[in-house]
Image (cartoon, rainbow, N blue to C red; front, side, top):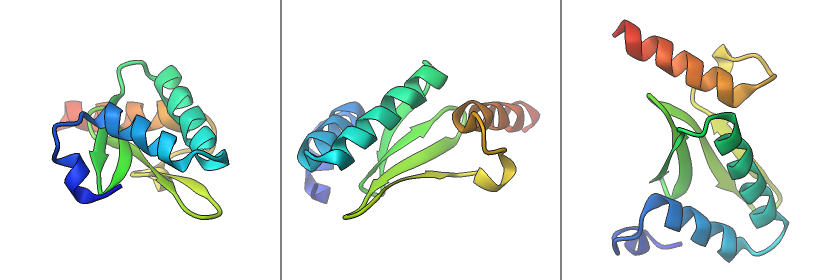
Length: 102
């Protein structure tokens, strides 16, 4: 996906759906599944498009979704502060606590 496409008035959810469709293989299916799980974990999550990748946030970035030739990777912005289970819910809770205290 070229940088210029992001500036043609497409919303972040549209760009994410487009990325999933363009991948068209196991990576698209995996990214789509991760997207659904993130939305299930927190229905109020906001989808954004940054750094040419999907970004999910709520009171701050939760994670980014990146696709590579042999991998799909979720990068959690505050991953070192989270336990390995229920990462999305924990990331949202951490963002909300920090937002309230600032």
